[in-house]
Amino acid sequence: MSSESDSLDVGDIGKFDPGLTQRLISVMRPILKTYFRAEVNGLDSFPSGGALVVANHSGGQFPMDVPIFSVDFYDKFGFDRPVLTLSHDILFMGLTGDFFRKTGYIRANRENAAEALRSGGVVVVFPGGDYDAYRPTASENTIDFNGRKGYVRTAIEAGVPIVPLVGIGGQETQLYLTRGTWLAQRLGLKRLLRSDILPLSFGFPFGFSAAIPPNLPLPAKIVMQVLEPIDITAQFGSDPDIDEVDEHVRSVMQQGLNKLAANRRFPILG
Image 1 (cartoon, rainbow, N blue to C red):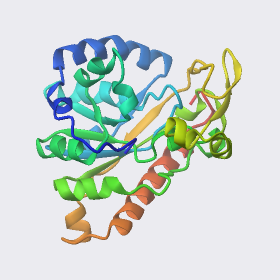
Image 2 (image 1 turned 45 degrees about the vertical axis):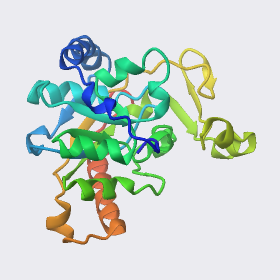
Image 3 (image 1 turned 135 degrees about the vertical axis):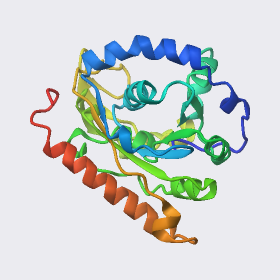
Image 4 (image 1 turned 90 degrees about the vertical axis):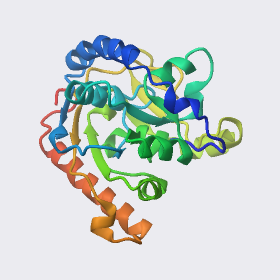
């Protein structure tokens, strides 16, 4: 998950506004389909009821994973089945916090996830968080959750399948050079900003950037693939080993990402 919180904000789950979300999606759809030439494949295998969508995270400061997935998901299943995304607390600070809650973003804690899943919700989680979203472009086709496995326990406790989701193209929206973990440690960002990274990238229009100033994303083609759902109990028994399940999920996702990479002919162009 992107972050953890000690307290449950029960209001997060109930604030989803299908009307507002539909209007937002209608505005974003032509942008995503034209600028990023976005594609989402494999939704025919998506299970009914609650499901934990486990995805790799891409795009640095401007990740498009959730909007791109949501456009196609809502086109297929409608707005009565909300997509709820576990998100960092910083998203809910200030005047925009209520807007994000109404359009399907919830605080990333186990309690929120459990409540949403048990109510039949579709919950999206990025175990790698910012560490994944800022991975170097040279490693764009690598699944790396930085050792985080809490998503497995969340799915087990809620009794829902894991739906792996992989995407390619997000790390081509600019040239990501390094996560800058060494620089973050030296500057003490963990204590000041709760961040283990200080990513360095090169893009348009500012050239080199350390998150500030923020470069605009290049129009890289982004393709996402929904993989077959994983029924944990059916595959690993009633008392599954967390490490074993995590290893399997990452292996399946790596195979899926490898296939997307094999079909990609050119950077940015797709």
